[in-house]
Amino acid sequence: MALSCMRCSPGASAVRRGLASAEPPAPLSFARCGLRRAAALGWRVAAVATTGVQGAKDAGVEKAARSASPSKVENGSPSEIILDDFEDLSPLSENDDSTVSITVVGASGDLAKKKIFPALFALYYEDCLPKHFTIFGYARSKMTDAELRNMVSKTLTCRIDKRENCNEKMEEFLKRCFYHSGQYDSEEHFMDLDKKLKRHEGSRVSNRLFYLSIPPNIFLDVVKCASKSASSGNGWTRVIVEKPFGRDSDSSSALTRGLKQYLVEDQIFRWIDHYLGKELVENLSVLRFSNLVFEPLWSRQYIRNVQLIFSEDFGTEGRGGYFDRYGIIRDIMQNHLLQILALFAMETPVSLEAEDIRNEKVKVLRSMKPLQLEDVVIGQYKSHTKGGTTYPGYTEDKTVPKDSVTPTFAAAALFINNARWDGVPFLMKAGKALHTKGAEIRVQFRHVPGNLYKRSFGTDLDTATNELVIRVQPDEAIYLKINNKIPGLGMRLDRSNLNLHYAARYSKEIPDAYERLLLDAIEGERRLFIRSDELDAAWELFTPLLKELEEKRIAPELYPYGSRGPVGAHYLAAKYNVRWGDLTTEQKA
Image (cartoon, rainbow, N blue to C red; front, side, top):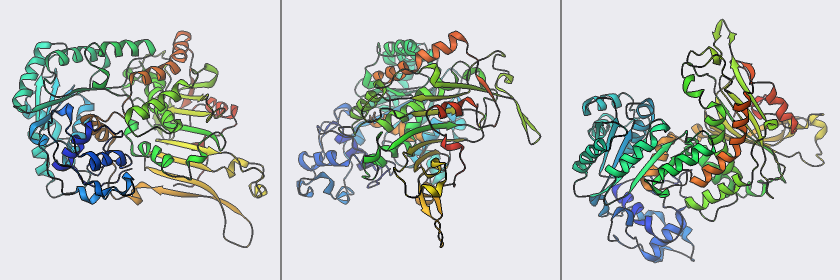
């Protein structure tokens, strides 16, 4: 969902940061190395045209570089600005006077090796990182700088395109990577880290980002030590925390209170849902708010139901010990699917500013009632033999208790009590060890009143239902199911797909969600991160259900490994006169 009008050159980065403190709303995002959206262009560029580029206060920049010409705004409309005029902007002083130090806490873990370091390299490869940056790995493991670089190098690829200077860029990136071994609860060890950071930062304005790739039970220890001993003295300090953020309302609130002893809300970047960084999820609001054909239909008047579906075709396979503490509801539904639901159902925000978007999402969550047990089906996969291969059941995982009742599958019906969505069921479904792998949003529209062609569909009117499908993974695509006449002399109807298959339409590889969200954190863009009141509202919907399931030890319905899930999920959908769209035979988009 990007209009790439300028790559992330030093000049582009300077303009981007220079506008960060301008008064008019909406984030500057048109210069994000070809990755990002230009939908927020208008107000920010208007600010350039009318007031000139202002220095970014939080980065310590004192002076503006130059003003854009007011003559470029025609008829008072910011959208008429000619983007090419920004191509030759020269670098601003901030590139020489500030640096960003990124500390990956838990650097020896799988997440850091497989996701965080590769994402940082991809940003560097695309010239999206600041001119002056340093990356430090921090963990308890004893390791030298050379050993860290060797570990990281094994996971780096030039996957975006095949340039001749790939190896050269890797070497340059690895030279910026360093390691510091220390305990997570030692202020002294973080003071030693601070000394190393200062040596690399020199006399420049120092901005610091801490990525907590660690278990949540040590979040507070690290935040306490980092805030007291390794915060920036003259720039910003930000902390990224990943899910799981608590197990219920009480633990989540306690963790938030603990973090706020050492940080203010604007310093906390809660990365509860990396799916919000997926290209198709980001495109959801663009699809709705920038296409007149969809927005008028986005209500109970035309939409019969909405389905949010997540499925994996593999089980826990030796990793069940961690999963068993949380289960599929906490792992997928309470964050991934609920966040997509809120983004889908929200009212039009005042602007594309992070606060305006998050305000609307919170309104959606607060309009929903907590889930009741009668609107939920839980399941757990069991052993199954197929094609001569036996796939183990969940409780056969050696890391899982034999008597575990933790659900590996859940389906739920939720309702939004407002004028737009009253009575429309939002059906969620998530599971492991199912027949396929994927994530998608399905919007099923109402039947055509008095359909002249109903005889062509027989008694099953669902075959005539128009459906909008947004496939998040794999093979990103958007397609709309329509009814169409089959060529010939007779009157026979068929269902066809009007589809946008991303791989066929766009030659550039889609950036990983970690790249997008890391870049957002560096730039201070909070739109895809979760605010504390939004997190509270999300937990309030699921906490009563989770407590009831655990206190009563309700047994999940068993389903075979590799199947379509428990039968109860079909009955739940039928209760609201709905069929799961992913289980029907359909034309592949």
